[in-house]
Image 1 (tube, rainbow, N blue to C red):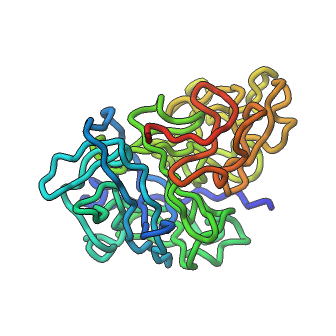
Image 2 (image 1 turned 60 degrees about the vertical axis):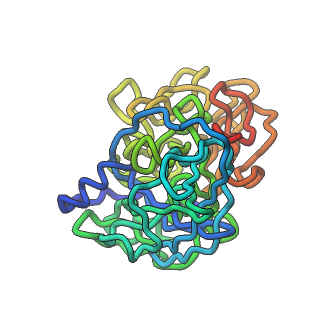
Length: 361
């Protein structure tokens, strides 16, 4: 189906306290439970990433928590973490770290109501304390909007409110329960996909960019000592400010009337496939947060977009219907072919798509 391209929304300054928090993270939150995690959808914010994370140790198990989501989404379960990747933690009381969560949070919460602002939600970090998930308040930077129709297009606008939270700019906030694959970028936080009506944990642990597949970025919820995982750069956006560390620009890269985060081509304008004139590099490929280039791996609408390179095909790897040019012969075709906390993607080296696990054992 064709969704209307979102309009640009006005921005207003956040209160000083909330702005300080939002500058620490890519405005995202995760709401999880005991079987299949659910969470509100959002994207945006700003901030940097530092460190390579991870302390060596003797293993450890991890879970993904059980916080209720916001925007009308109650948590309905969580996936068991990969475990084994971190040490025994440095905090007293039996705190356990792992490949996803490099250090336990210093300030914890149990539910969203424990957070001091409506713009914050209580999220699982992946660490556990005496077997219980450790959660902390994180910014919920929903996708910008001027009116509900900006939230996923006219077909889905009834599922959302477009309103300001804590005095910030208007954001798409889901008011219907559950999630839809077509609008998973609005309904689920980065690192999660909408599967069977719930936001499933697809966080791939990482210590740095080299640990992530093609067109993915390694970032952390708050700082380099907490949860670090790979996120697809091609997430929905309304304005560049929604992208934060997923791209410096927001544009309709593949011409399907949906905008996504992308870097600038030659450091100036947003990279769009229509700007890629070299037949050997027909699609936009994300390189860094700020920069993209014309390459072989990138968004596409059909095999014809990729066929200038022999051996490439256009495959819908995620649930939202966006497709990418990848080498033929992959061992998976979509994210649901892989276990939780893995994604179906071309490897960093550019091999055909397979289930990628990052630094998880």
